[in-house]
Image (cartoon, rainbow, N blue to C red; front, side, top):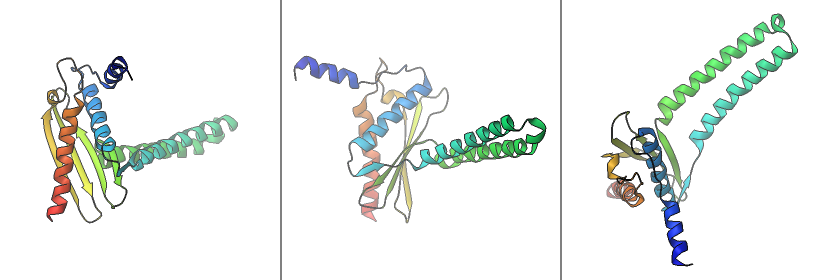
Length: 189
């Protein structure tokens, strides 16, 4: 490869974000953390259980709505009233379960990884309040017996330069610090 091609590849990997948009900054930092957590550790494999549960709940709700629409199409309104009533109630119940799942189980979790050899589950979650510059990153590990977690609360400016480019090496340093503190905590016990 020539030096020009190397420079082109290096510039393609840079993530630029509008630094005054808090939601975009949070999502860009989440992507950088996920890339660091899963990319640097080949013994961790991404687990899609939370996303699959959410997808299944949404698919059930859409299936109920399609079934109600099809039933109403084949049996005009006076005949389809009980089916429509049951479908509407089932749809809202599924949406309630979906809301509870995203509010209490996911809680901002954007990456779940499973250790290949050991029975450990690593979760990364984040929170960034509206109109606040503090990015709260929580890394937790569950080994079946106990769950431990560490939290980092830093300004998002610590990970973004003045041009809005995500500094992956600073994000990686923070993720590695949290990961190593959880790993060392397990070895001390």
